[in-house]
Length: 222
Ligand SMILES: *Cc1c(COP(=O)(O)O)cnc(C)c1O
Image 1 (cartoon, protein in one colour):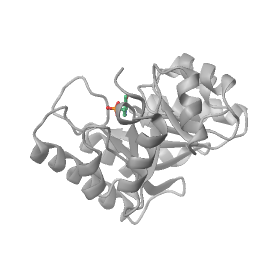
Image 2: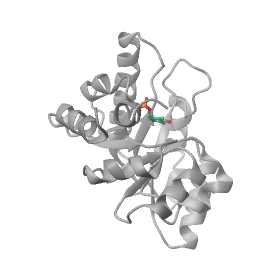
Image 3: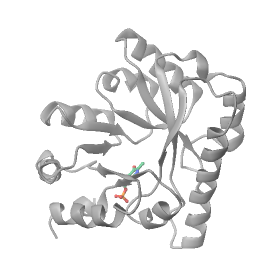
Image 4: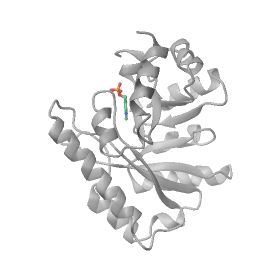
C-alpha cells in the first residue's frame, strides 16, 4: 500500500463521523510527508520540538502543525510562532509558559489539556480531580493568550477493546461535563476531543473523537 492509499482508506472510514485526521509523521523523512501532502493532508503531528521546527522549515507553509507529544517548558518558545494546536498540555506551569511566550508575539495559541486515562503510570496528563480543580479556581481565565479548545487522551496499550472503549467513553463524558459548566471562562471552548491512534481509532470514532492521530497506519511502522 502507498501512503496515498493508506490515507484514502482512513478518510473513507471517517467520512461518516465529524472527525479530523492528523497524520503523525514523527521519525519519518520529509519525502514521506510530502507524499501525504500531495495526497491532500494538511494536518501533521510531531512529538519532538526539534523535529517539528526542522520539518516546518522544510515543508509548505499551508500545513497546520500539531504538537502531540510531551512538551518541555524551555522549548515552548520555539514552536509558539507557528504551531496550530498543542495537544498535550499536562501542567499548569506549561500553560503559563505558553501564555507568556504567546504574549511576546501577540498571538493566541490553541491548546488541548491532556487527561491521564490509561492504566500505564508513565503516560502524562491531568487527573480528573486536578482538571476540575483548575477549572473551578478559574486559573485558566487569566491566560489571555491561550485558548483551551478541548481534551486529549491516550488509552492503555492493550488488546482489550473493552478497556480501551471504557477509557475513551470516560474522556468523552469528562469533556461533556466540562462543556456544560456554567462558569467557563471565554478562553475555554470545548470543541475538540483528540483521541485515537492506529491501533484504536475505530473505537475512538465510535466514542465521539473529533481528532484522530494516526502514524503507523499511514507511514508504516517506526
Ligand atoms: C506516535 C503518536 C501517535 C500515533 O501513533 P500510531 O500508533 O503510530 O498511529 C498518536 N498520538 C501520540 C501522542 C503519539 O505520540
